[in-house]
Image 1 (cartoon, rainbow, N blue to C red):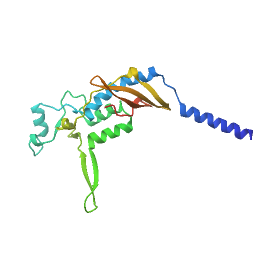
Image 2: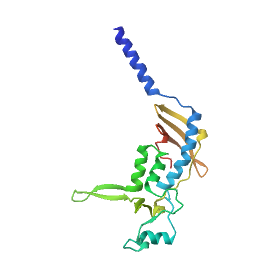
Image 3: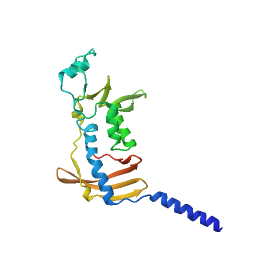
Length: 210
């Protein structure tokens, strides 16, 4: 009986230790947020805002589309500008994964590079698939191109986070959830909940920040 009790106590202790994990201070988490949030704003502009800058160089456009049997003005995707920090899909994916978790990044990648489809049943009861959101970026001939009408669907990205007013809501293992007051145009808007995950490569955001 004593052995059973000791084993049970040891198991409870182990479970408690595993569930709690390291405890992070407000100062540590604020430092993480102050580093990741500005980077996330850049990503928000790429995935939810006006997108990457498009080349306005006529020579670049003529050279790129010289092999297409179509008028340049009729093509919906144009190459990114030469001064764009991301010249291909691989670079953009890598930059995204420096800010967000793999799980949240997958949603962004689908939205950006594949588009988002929806399925409905028609009058005959058959399932039809249609594109709810077309791909934002397509890489062709090793060149990253941007859909021209991104501004039409761009979100207002003017949310300000007051990290000096943030508080830790919960800590569980390598996941920390915080509450941060956010403001729009100088006025309070809402208390945003943000999940942070400590991965083998460092801290990553696991929540949208737009």
